[in-house]
Structures are given as structure tokens and as C-alpha cells.
Length: 493
Image (tube, one colour):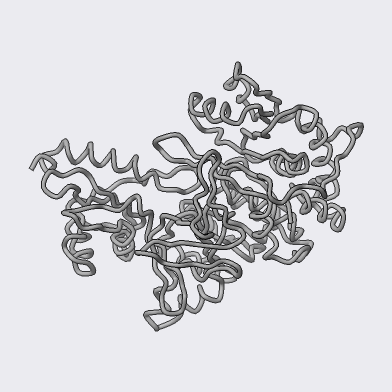
């Protein structure tokens, strides 16, 4: 299986079904196939090695993704929110490249060698030009590179994660072709450079589900779109869900068409999951855990698991509401020294210009975690974020989970900051849902965990720093807390 085959199958068998946009005037799968094949011909004539997209969500995303695949060229969606110097540095690494540019992007990339920039509207005009011969989408090489996704680290040069056609094809084929009902529609608000966005384009085309795109996330716009377009399926990151629930709770109109809501991309506070189950009892909740390097989801806590855990009196089952469920068929999970390793055909673990990161097919996720007796996977945070206090390794995720169990805590993040005596001190930032004191929360942690894991200081904040895909900017938080606490009398003690 390769990406070109997905659009060929969809455009041939579901030609009249709407693929992208409004159910009234959106682009059909047949039209999407025509446009992708024309773009492939246009790209082949330009001699580029990479097709880059620097834009928010639009119709250009699926057309470029499928068109690049048919042309046999890697597709690289890049974060348009990057500062100019970082954006130019990443795009320069893709040269020779054709860049599809959203509003205001072209001027930011002016003067780059071997980079041809085409504005989004001009690109869409090429795709709609019926005089352009259509390429054949059946002949892609499954072993070739389909997608390059640049990591979003806050320091150092981003790595380009490599996803080959065979990796993405393996992920998509776990579903049944054309299995979606004609009235199904997915709402996509994660940006194009996130693996969830890429996998959504491929999966929805394969199963035949219409996609409605939002250029950026706003909870009121999200809820309005879900209602207006009769959205049946959606995926959100943790920072989105509670804000969506605020809107739904305030106006009382619910989300009547919604059937399934998947969440992932970071730890989800249990209170938010429970609130979603109370406000949207008819909606199937799915917790999806995956990484860029694994072609998206590798483990799922499904709707039945959510309901059993929510209503169960069994402590083991209740705890599973905080898990990411069980591995998907075809994916193996192993825990080695407290670290999650995965293996399967959808797992790439490869970076451009770097030696293959697999060990006998196994990929080190660098996420700490464990499996319970029934094979449910619990993720405890990044190994890189481990706090070393007095030679002892402490997991921030373990401490955060305990803080989030307190009814007055809406969100929490734990980091280590430099300390002369212990190497690092444990400190926390907490967003309150109700009144509570620092001592009250510290006592709460101390009862559940040993004193070494109790934050020495807790700062109450209005919000935690997240990027637009819901990933906690832990290094930013660490720097802020270090500057705050180390400049205080407490920090000099």
C-alpha cells in the first residue's frame, strides 16, 4: 500500500461523495483525485525533490499530500508559526523544493536558493486546470519517503522524521476501506504539520469520511462548526477539550450529531474526561496514544473501556481511565527499564540524515510507562523530563497525576530546577479550578507519594504554556519557574 493508491481507490469508488468541506458544496473524492493527479504532473515538471506546505488548514493540504505522493516526492508540512529565521532554516534544508505558501509566507521566504514559492490560490488554480494532464497514481514505490515531519523541540536543530509509504499504508489499512457512512463528517482543527492532521487526511479518504477543516482552534468556532456541519467524529488535544466543554456547558445545546471524540497528544486530566462523559453521555470517547515516528496512533482506550472504568467500583478498572488503553493489532509494546518500546510495520523510527533509530525493529519512544496485568498501557511522560534529585530519578508525570487527583486542580506541571544541595529541586505550576493553598496540595502529594516527590514550591498560574498542538512547553516552564524561584528568598536559601 502507498499513499497514491488511497486517493485512487477513493476517487474511483466514492467519486460523488464529498471529501473536503461543506456537505453542500465541498470537493468530492472524484474531484480531489483529479486535482491531485494534475498537481503531480505539475510537480514532476519542476524538478523539485521536496514538496513543502507552509500554511494553515485548507484544501491545499490533501491536494498537496496526494499530489506529492503520486509525483514520487516527499511531502513536508512546516510550522508557519515559526520565527522567520527558524522557518527559513528548515525550508532551506528541503531544497530543491516547491513551497506552497499561505497568506504572508512568500515574503518571509524570499531569496532562498533552490526554493520555488507558489501562493496557495495559484496552487489551487493549477489543480483545477483541466488542461493539465493527469498523472497515474498507482505506481508509487512503497519503500520511498511519503512525508517528512520536523520535530518541535525548543532547543537544537529540529530533526526530520521520515515516514515511508509503507509505514503510513500499514496504519491506514488497519481500517476497512469505504466503511464510513455517507453522513459521517470529521472536524479537523490540528495544524497540517502535526502527524494527527496527516493521518486524518489519509484515514478519512480511505474510509470515505468527509472532512471539515478549521484554520485555527477557537472553542466557539469549533462548537459552531460541529453543529452547523453535523460533525460525527472529531479529534482534539487536551487543551482544547475543556474549553469546548465550557462552551457546551454554558449554552446547553450539546453536540447532537457527534458520535465519537478522540483525544490525545498529551496527558488528559481525569476531571476533564469525567466532565466530557457527563456532558456528552451519547459520545464515544477514545484516548489515542501515538507519535510522529509511529505514523500516529499505536494504542487506544476505546469507548467501552471508558464507560467500564467510569462506572466501575474496581480500583484497577477505575485507574484505567488514566491509561492509553491497549496496543492496536499489528503493534507490539515492550517496557524496558521503565521506557516504552514499540514495533510494527507502521513504526518508522527514522530521521533524515541520521542512522536508523530502530533496534531489531524496535523503536525507543523515550516515554516512560508501564503495562498493567491486563495489558493496559500507562504513559508517565518523557524520559528526557526526568528530575534527578540527590541521585534519584523522579518522574514528573507521576507527581502531576497525583496533583490532578485533587478536586481543586484543573491542570498541573512539574519540573526540576537547579539546586546546589540536591542537584535539582521539585517545583510545580498549578492552574486552580477552586480555592486551595500550596500547603494543602503539598500535603496531598506527600500522602500519596514519598516526601522526596513532594514539590518544594508550587506556583499558581492562570495557564500552562502549551504549543498549538497541545504539547506542554516544559523547558519554557522550567526556565520561567527557575527565574521566579531562584530570584526569591526561597531560591537563595
